[in-house]
Amino acid sequence: MNWYIAKIVFKISCGGNPQFDEQIKLIKADNFEAAFLKARVLGLSEEDSFLNNKQKTVKWEFINVADLYPINELKDGVEIYSHIHEETEASAYIHGVHQKAAFMQLEAKPVF
Image 1: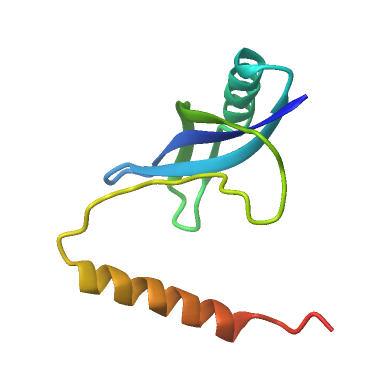
Image 2: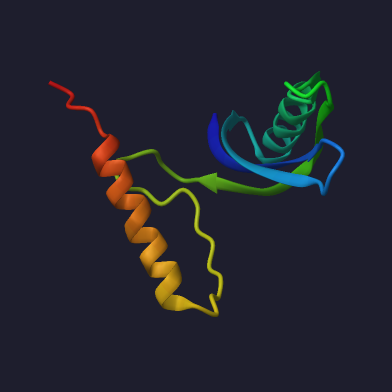
């Protein structure tokens, strides 16, 4: 068995502009084709439709598997996903990353 990282994309509709949820999932399969099929089945099984607190229908629609990457080995510190993008406001992006890290540190609960 091999491990794969799958990016599964959903469209969320509730009357306004649609939103898209990109989920990163860990998939265990014999080969690439089996991992792709398993990721698609997982996405389809997570489609949903329900009423929100304003009695509007919220629909989660599976779009497709956008990415699928093999993981050579599972070990501490191994890179499992990377995405490079450009930012027009580099300092604002860096500040946002620092803010998120600070928030996580404040919210962390002691393990002992």
